[in-house]
Length: 235
Image (cartoon, rainbow, N blue to C red; front, side, top):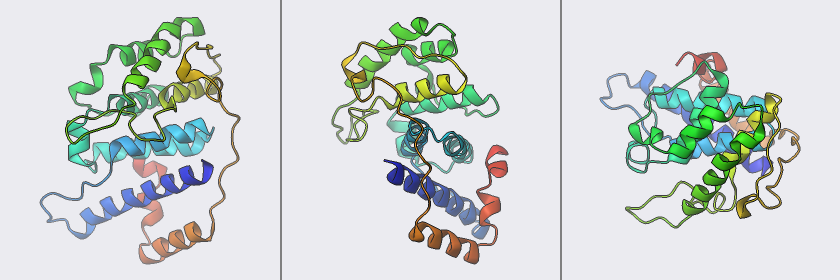
């Protein structure tokens, strides 16, 4: 999981750069580039939190918000697929940080379970969260279904069907701020998801990742500035 997550985070960083570079190179283009998938990028952030990579997950959260606020996202998934679970994870990130936000479409706010969790996730008493988390687990199982061309589910991807990624991200954030997590009696939270995994060692870039980064910096001297955390937070 560590290697695949690291490559996904790296790919998202490159993707963000190409979107901004496109607007620099083609300022007269009427539409710009809109190819980032908000749902996927949000899930990559949540996996980084699951692994305990707080620095990388934080960067990814800001990158995702910057892409959203600069309209780099694919229009159809964002507007039509209504990925409430992924929107919840990004709203949770924004609430944790307190200095970033996004003006979401109405669907992001119409799930009472997620609104209840956002109101209570910092409660020192973990038992306060239990009924809301159980409801979120139930929702996850109902959203772990096969999609059609007209019907979409938040957790239809094979890597998400059995992984309560949104619950585990909330647990990680509570642990980061020093709060205990409840034990949930729900089939979705059975081992290995009955507890957070230990913080995993950070992935060390291999020769392919290092080579790609070196070439990007060679061809585009502004690469590091464009993808810097300061630039993302300025969005």
